[in-house]
Image 1: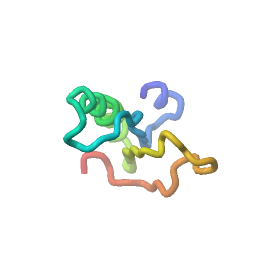
Image 2: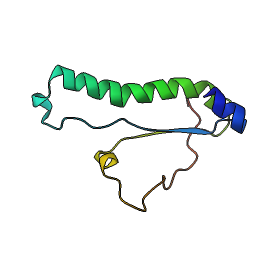
Image 3: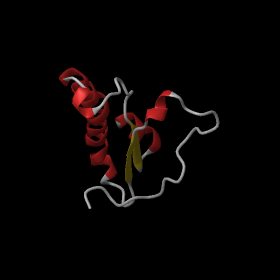
Length: 94
C-alpha cells in the first residue's frame, strides 16, 4: 500500500478479487480442510487487503472498496477484461 500511495499520492479505492475456487460440492460434503482453504483464500485475502487500505482510504472524502469473487475467474472470456460500472462509493466506515 505504501508504494501505491508514494507513487500516486493518494489511494481512492481498492478492488479485491478473491482467490481461486477449489473443490465444488454440496455444503455438507466439503471437509473441514476444504472449508479452511476457502476461508484463507477467499475471506482472509479480502480482510488483509481492506485492513491495509482503510487507513489510507479514510484520508479521501470519496473512496471505495470493491470485493468480488466468481467461478468465472477460472475461465475469463476474451474481451471482458477490466471492471465495468465502478463508481464512487460511500466513505469507509460510514
